Picture 1 (spheres, rainbow over the protein chains, first blue to last red):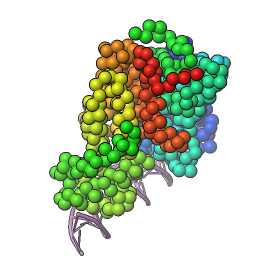
Picture 2 (tube, protein in one colour):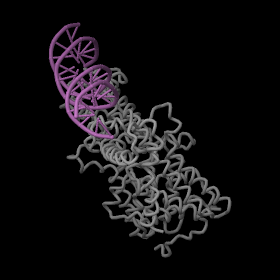
Picture 3 (cartoon, rainbow over the protein chains, first blue to last red):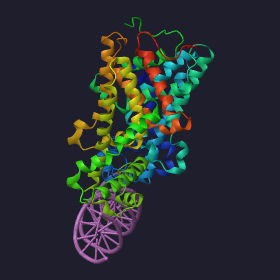
Picture 4 (cartoon, chains in turn purple, blue, green, orange):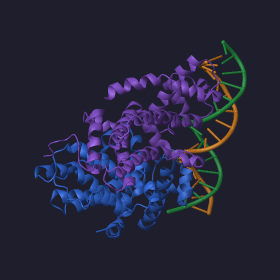
Length: 236
Length: 236
DNA sequence: GTCTATACACAGATAGAC
DNA sequence: GTCTATCTGTGTATAGAC
């Protein structure tokens, strides 16, 4: 499977993406016609991510947002009751999607080596598909209020734990070397993050998502596989 | 050498840190008594980094900054002429220091394997010593105005190029395998960044800076050394 | 050199017409 | 459902006393 196949399969379920957001936030959305809501939510979120990812969420004024989304300030407040509520939706809606898709793909594999490859590949594909959401989540996570501090880091911790579980299973079955799984998982997470945090650089160097997937898997496997069955056969 | 030795050696030169800032920004600083300036610049920068790194530079008001630094708003404006100017100082002053120290240490080594280790170690030590500055530079780099766009990414590119040069030299002398040096350098950069971007996690797991140095070197070397002369001798 | 008090702009949010 | 007009708080920056 490569990225274009993945994207098709995900796009089907993404038709439900804004519908789900509508369902979950019905109580706070004054507009009731589903079709209208879905259409405008998409405009609002795309505009919000675009402006936030340029100068930060704080710097984005509601006036700017309205202009970018093609709606007046008054209209915007029919879809969220405060700027902070909009922030919450941007923070949470994508990660629900991510977890669902990631778990679905990983659960199809059963041996740790294959699960590791699938986790890396699927996470990279997801962050490519939802790059503005991933970037936003990372850059703005720190601004979340203290009382929700428990969930601040949960995004990063989530993927790290997924990887660590796979590594620990692989060590138990003798496929992976018994290195520090916690640090290794943390390193894998850092490599995955780099794809959506500095994508401009990969674009500049014409690195495709599938090249990066292959590279990342090779890099990680050279460190943690017992015998090195990497796809690279002629190391010099 | 370990971190505590490094810190001592750098702290000596850091006595000049705020003095240098004073020298470079003399034109814009109304206060003329050097002693006073240095004392207050330190208070202002520490406060600014603390508040910015909590909620972002935009969210930090000048009122908050004055309260945290123990100075009135009026006094603050004797040290910078606008919030944007303060931003510029925070963005540039640390990186000058970093480049000077990094080049000094790397130039002492001549073979690529040793240079690679030194680059990784020194960068990690520097980011540990100046963590709030590194974090700030990364998180706020995107908000820099478009006309200075050429230097926006220069921090990340700088360390990446340093690593890549070392790798390419090592490939030429046959020490490193001929993998994609650009992607490898990018991966190393990602691992270095992770230390200051999510340091809370390493603190939680009681990972010391020297443990992380050792781990990172082992991880990178397992990928790019021709024979694997890693310090880990019993891989299973 | 540092303070307090203030000017002026712009932010988020709402009311009420259409 | 969406608009325009407006309220009110807070931001940056400065003036002038000490």
